[in-house]
Amino acid sequence: MPYGYHGCYLRIDASRGSAERVPLANSVLRQYIGGSGLGVRLLLDEGGAQADPLSPGAPLIFAFSPLVGSPLTTSAKFAVVNRSPLTDRCNDSLASSGFALAGKQTGCDALVIVGRASTPSVIVVDDGAVRLEPAGAIVDASCSDTEETLRRQLGANYRIASVGPAGMRGVRYATISHDGRHAGRGGSGTILGSKNIKAMAVRGTARCEWADRDALTALSRDLAKRSTGPDTAKYRELGTAANVETFNRFGTLPTHNFQRGTFEHAAGLSPDRMRVAHAHTRESCVACTIGCEHIYAGTRVEYESLFALGSLCGVGDGDAVLRAIQRCDELGIDTISAGGTIAFAMECVERGLLHEPWLTFGSASALLHAIELIGRREGVGHLLGEGSRRAAQAIGQGSLAFAPQVKGLEIPGYEPRALQTMALGFAVGARGADHNRSGAYEVDFSGKVDRRHATRESVRHAIDTEDRAALMDSLILCKFLRAVFTDFHAEAAGMLQAITGWDVTADELRDTARRILAAKRQVNLLAGWTPEEDTLPDRFFDDPLPGDPTAVLTRGQLQALVAEYHHQRSGTAG
Ligand code: SF4
Image (tube, rainbow, N blue to C red; front, top):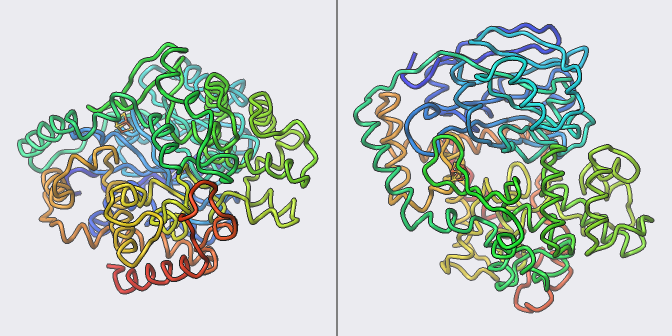
């Protein structure tokens, strides 16, 4: 067994309540590392690319990494990998904290869940021994209540990942929650709920050895010191919420379902306004020295939630948006997909395509009511719980043109017409429109390219950010560290050398990133991907962006960029 790993995964059959340890070859670990990379490899090996995501046979994978449990800052993370019930494509979502540490201490590098329990249940993994317990009264509980109840019942040293009421009712963008953080996008919670599993409770005592403890300690101290410097100050001081007003100034703040790039009530969503109105604290994930989490009235507030439930729905009442975020967290639904789908429905009402006259842009009460209906799958909430693409297919009448999604995943808070490297990143993303698997917006804001007119040069930058993200998500390290590195690949190689003892190099890691992305594309090909999916909704080609006449994106231009992307990607699968 290599240092840093246990050399196996635990395959849990929820139908039988049984489990088996499956060995992992050293070559697989070195080629895919952990996290998203290892998870995607296991998804392919378990036949998950071809399985209906909501069928009992579909695997749901929790993947840890060699860095989990090490003293390296921000490394206490896990990836959840599956074929998405929202997009039908490859999905990997990440979350932080004690579940990653306790999960790895069960003595395995990944947990793979297959099957379906006959009644709502909790999977308990105790040092590698697995049992099912009835979920009982917590079936409809919020994620935080579920954690509290289970830790009281099972013991305080268990760490819990759970789904909320929405996941148990089949909302297609349900999250898996742990300690207030979410593996949020693409419906991994929907899959756990479809397996009749309300929660996973894990604890263990297994430890991994490090190959070079002294080197690892020195690297960790150095990284921790740099992580508290100026490169991360913006996350500590204001958090990502500060983006609301910054993006508004740039004209890139999606508003009224991407009909505009500016929002007249943006100040109502700013951190300054939030601090005046609500008790504010700052927190960190376990083993993090940065501490980017800004908590208002007990709720983690990030830019993506503010934009999706705020400007996208035309709601500038910060208190109402805070309440909307709280309800999404309690119900266990992805805030970006919830906001995107509600904003889409608001535009359908505005155009007379959907008869729900109460559901109007700017109405805080409509926003909150819609979230409740989605969580309960009642009334129009049943349709909206399907996500914007399926809702548009049901509504018809040309509404797919303005459903804010790519491959079925709702678009994050970056206006594609004015951020065209990001537009390419959204179009080609394996899991759909995504700002975490492609950091192309950084390129647009860097001044290295003309953000309103992407070129071949933009393609190369988009590929570089995608490669780096694949590596960070497999090691796993938090992306808020990225500006801290002077030579990320060389430093990452040094970390892996100290932990595993492998003679890994920066060039090897560049190949590893490409291999992982090729594996994601392989999942999509097996799942039925076609080239026509690599595009954006018609709105972004046909509708001008008010106030920014130079932000024009044509179909032909994006098609050429996508073709160039695939050309540059071809032959680099590693
Ligand atoms: S920087 Fe923020 S998201 Fe990243 S590990 Fe630290 S607290 Fe968690």
